[in-house]
Image 1 (cartoon, rainbow, N blue to C red):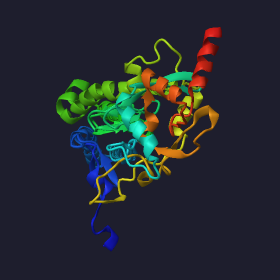
Image 2 (tube, rainbow, N blue to C red):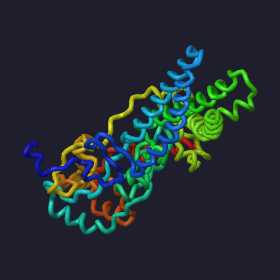
Image 3 (cartoon, one colour):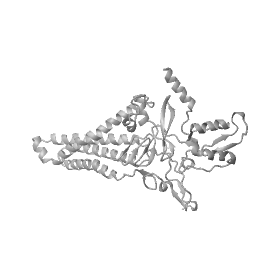
Image 4 (cartoon, rainbow, N blue to C red):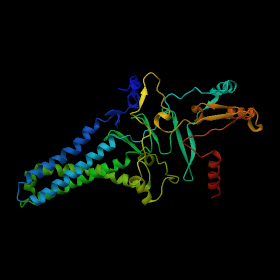
Length: 385
């Protein structure tokens, strides 16, 4: 091992979420990943039993019929399990958290920082924040666990203990959150599972009807086909209904979380682009790179600070300057404002103090670009309408 890494650990070994990792952090699972064994059994058990029956029936005088049916079943089984693994073992879009916001600043002016420290107790951390998305005002929430304003459509999963981009839901059957980076694979998984269910159901009936005998006599003798027919008939209502529901969500550009909370029940969905473009966003849009590199080396001696900075390849930390002197230009020396203050909004009393002292605080949010004047313009435009 590299001597510089002798006293280091991989980031996934120190991660504060509830995820489980395999292969050195290459596979990211949810805390309930054990449910994959049950899901695999519910899918693979009936499907493999059907394939075994097809192999046995190859010995009859109709191999030209049963052989293609066997290959079709095997293909659908491989598809279903491949997409299951790609859904459950993939980072769904975890957002880096601020577990211990930095408080140290370089090149700090002592007098100005003393004034800031005296006012730190008066800072008010808002729970919501209005931003503009496609000309619409969208309210985002502050996550008390990850200490960040969640981007639009993101939410915190209480099971995995992570904020996830475009959070859809936490699926117990795949043991993973469904989010921005694994939603297309989840759609392919439930679609292939539905196709496999219908496939086994149809050809189990065909196997019975192709035999020249009374149907009821065949049903009494071919118990396996009867079991497969009943099982697939029941299952298709669940997995098929789920597939239809998510097809509706894709067409309307909603997530399960948004749909259940009726987020856009009384106002226009700002993310809807039309059916064609909504479907393109799911199936033809490039999946973004993960925001967290779980295989990165992190020093074991240092206290881990997960702040979405350089360690996650999200670019250098933004600097926030306090320009003293206000409008008259006096005292032009700039000081650095801790990044934790970048997302804070001041209460009325503190804001008045800032105005009385003539200090202008230039603040920039690295995620949310719209400013208050822009939001006011949108509100003014809506009032005129």
